[in-house]
Length: 159
Image 1 (cartoon, rainbow, N blue to C red):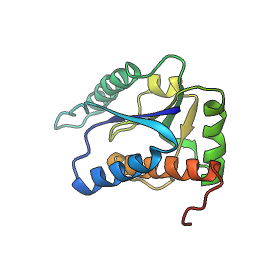
Image 2 (cartoon, rainbow, N blue to C red):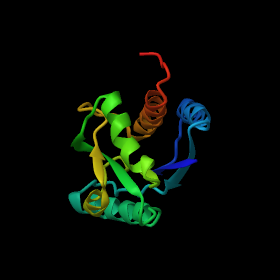
Image 3 (tube, rainbow, N blue to C red):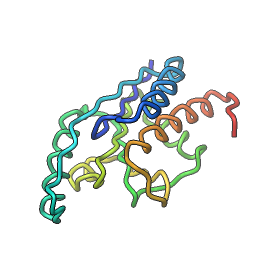
Image 4 (cartoon, rainbow, N blue to C red):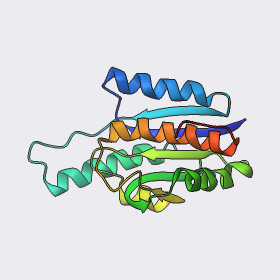
């Protein structure tokens, strides 16, 4: 069975987000083996200076990088990335899956993904040009992964 992993910075704090992610993870069970790994989010000092943010992003990035299999196809959520349609997204993730590569999605922390993490990405994905909380992005991502598998299976899914 195909392997898909989501590595996310931070813990889901809201019950409705956790329930939503769990629902889509359950639905995905017939298409792939989904693993969700959370890494600790760094606190930024009260001043929120650039140096503090940069240090936090670097530490988060190191934690995420340590969870990435060496041969995985890595998709990092990034506001500057591609913003495909659901059909194009499905096609793009199908390519590595069809040759047996593990697919790993990364959702960075509230300040984004560190440059080293972006450099490791095989694909940078923007979920939207709008700004969303990174915890909501996780729910949106798992829903789009489910939608992609439905598209690839030629199954209908509400539009």
